[in-house]
Length: 330
Image 1 (cartoon, rainbow, N blue to C red):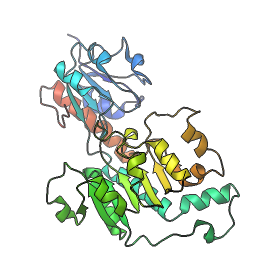
Image 2 (cartoon, rainbow, N blue to C red):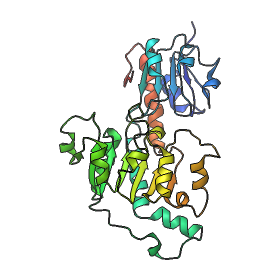
Image 3 (spheres, helix red, strand yellow):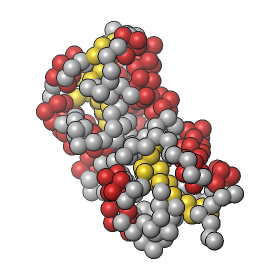
Image 4 (spheres, rainbow, N blue to C red):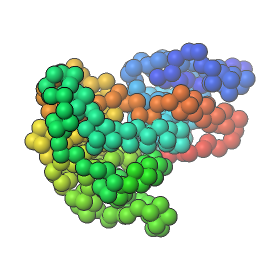
């Protein structure tokens, strides 16, 4: 009888140190290093469990070909790149790893926020491109962080961690999350807003920490960004689809937003002719001076990367040994 097969679709390359240590006594583990769903054809069909990262999506096309799969683990927090409904129809559980990068993403969001609100990126960019003088006045006016207000869209694990860090800096924290139970705001010392319309006009900065769903797709768009006061800052370390980056670019160019930090895009990596990327790479433009773009890296630390691999592998092991999976999202 052949041993069970666990397939890692993308992102992780050999040596499979953690995966072989956790699964090697009961299963064969293969990493495909795929960059598109088509790369999986003929290589994934016999998998008993699948570990998926964020370079590719798995749709019903792939799920319908799986012959004996019991579990698809999205080794990360977001799970919008797997067709959960199609998997459920086939009796395949989909799980995520919701607790691997909480500290890292919260730290990154705050780091980006500080870089924007203290003018660090702007002044570095202007000096590097010789667009500005050697004096602080080029970034005026900046204001003391303490007492300013940040609005969080989403108050899950990462949102809470971000709120705690923001409070330590003296920021007033508002949040919008219709799925958070009453009383959490009291425990954390933050203020709930019932709608974005209530929250955004009060914020000098907004940071996104919600999953990408049909409800949150472009939750920050031209209309909602316009609700922010002029001169506000925007940070997205959640999912690319939660923010319309072209609306952000327009708001930067019109001087409605003073700065934005984007860790995630809807299409990754972006096309070379993407208008946001072109403007961001052109010295002297407002996008270049006032927008920070990172390559979906807010989650990363060596410890966090280990966590996502280890916890994903452990969930596969549970299922292969006949135990129920953890953190099922479908």
